[in-house]
Image 1 (tube, one colour):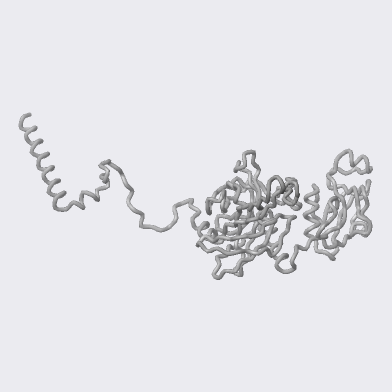
Image 2 (cartoon, helix red, strand yellow; image 1 turned 180 degrees about the horizontal axis):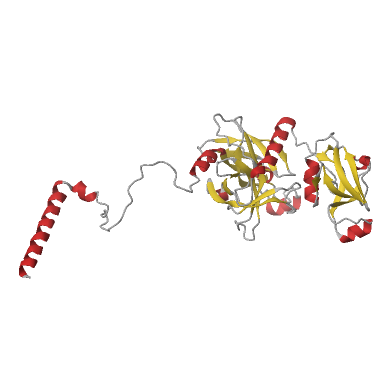
Length: 381
């Protein structure tokens, strides 16, 4: 036993001596040890990865592709003081200067010539609009045109070598597909959030006149409006527009305008100065048992017409109050927003077939839509 302890002590002494020799002559060998740190705490460190490929499940390629084309938008608006021109008010309070209201939002560069898509509510009423790019460049923007019915606006900036986003296909999306939202929430800077498509074709929300939203649980917060909703390939599939929230922040229910709609609005504004939509001049309502009984209709689906504009396209085609529109060009109609979107998509001047139920009879009527007026009567679609 005594010989064993003697051997053990000699071994430890030799090891300590070797350690001190190495630490003196080659201190770098000791510092490179994966178990040592400058703080004297034993740590384990993974070896650096030699591969530059993204780890499984990473969306870095999609983000790097789309992020440079997403911009931050800052708006300023001069707000006049109430009763500023009232002599009595000025007598007691003097001249109070107007205040400047600042707004924040996001946008997407969709053309190398400087066209930027954003929401109408981001730039509505703004006196000045500034656009900030990810690379640090800034530019004053002008409004090319707006479409309040879809809450979209087209801006123009004058910069060269602009990054441009690639347009995807929103019609190919399905519930459960992964998507990413990019924008400038709360003004903190470009931010990416992830989620899935929760629903498609959301309408009857009372947000816009024409509603066909993509619903997603990717976090969308104030300041994200006008930003990009992209797929996992980095292609634009929607423009972030609104959220459902009780707190003012994201609760997992966000809405985006499909890129198909955004493209139609962009091309209409750039080419013609406005969006061309069909219009037939009717007052539609949801089909209810009470309305069906009032007009003597035995239909259980479709949209009932309660008013027809005299001399309008629908009246010329023979549509009457009490008719129930079942189909438009072979596509079934279930709700008022659905009919509104279908009619808006019709080409003015081109005949379309409307399947209509009148009492017990089903008719097919040829309707030639007109161009939707810029300021239509509130009750007419």
